[in-house]
Image 1: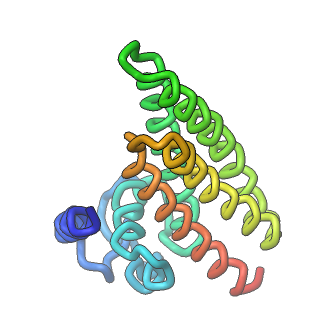
Image 2: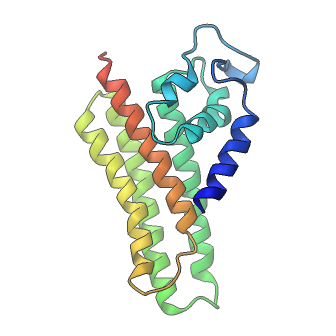
Length: 187
């Protein structure tokens, strides 16, 4: 699975402009005053994912810097959490799902809802420059995705959402690294 993710991110990264390029609003080319995406993303554990966030969400930001990349990761995590929450609801409604799988999916649905709430709280804490709350909220989000995985381990049954949970944990891990970068630079 890790090999497939590496290949996916390698291919998607090859479609991106050079790392030294930055984006302007609306995707109309480089913006001189934007930060160096690769340099900022190098502070995260999942650099290709960070660059992908800039490529996917950068059009909505006037400047690409640590704060905007943090916002992009929060946006990406929220979008993907909503999608996987909808998928979990769909799977839980299937008549072919066993009672224990449905119960695990209900736990996942709850965790995804909590994750969405805490992504907002973590983002608000960054704006307020409250590192403790930001770390607590974003670390909690990662634990929510992990709790979904644990619900299936306890049954035991394979988690149909495992891949999505892993990607979501990586996105929020990057957000945590970017939050630290933002707050370590001062106001």
